[in-house]
Amino acid sequence: MDEILKEKLALGRFHYVRREFARAEQYLTQVVEGNPSFADVYNMLGVCFHDQGHYQKAQRAFEAALRLNPAYTDAALNLAVTYNDTGRYKEAQEAYQQALSTSGAAPGQLDHFVRGKLANMYADIGDVYLSSGLYPEAISELRRALALCPTFVDIRARLAAALRDSGRRDEAIVEYEEVVRQNPSFVPGRLNLGLSLYAAGRKAEAADQWNEVLRVSPGNHSAELYLKFAGMDPSGAPPAAPPP
Image (cartoon, rainbow, N blue to C red; front, side):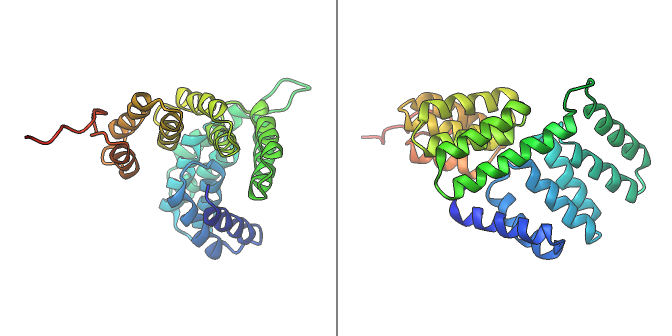
């Protein structure tokens, strides 16, 4: 995440905590437009929409959060409330039951809800370290988050970005590959995996990732642009030589 988006995220969180939802929405919307990979941002945005009576937008935001993190109990509960408010009582009950079923745990263990809360807290601390350029500390916090919730692909993608930006490219590639393995349709993960592979000189593999993005997201501007910059057409092949 670049510095401008980090600032917008910080402002969005600030207004969200103060329950200034209309102002928070302005910043959080810009964040997801620039980087649609954070489940917690979609959840906050959904709360902002719901508070203002924009129930369809709230529903889409909570559903986006759950696509990124299916075990995100807060988002599931918020979605259940939104379904209920729009008269979709059956879907509301199903979402509520799903939230309850994913938050259970054996005695003496953290339930999924608490694990998710803690994981997001560690990830937030990691973001604070990242904003200060303290990469080792940020990486440590993000790894703590993933130790609790290893399937949170949005947090794993943040870890991969921190590793990449700190110069640990090979480790970043491993994490991006795991992101794509866990969620093959997660476009930001594939885009960034391609960039990391390309920087490592693995151009054909990078092209494979960007072409896969175009398969799941036809017309994706970033994938087309990266292929163009790499001197490849959308098939991954070098452009044909001009006729003599």
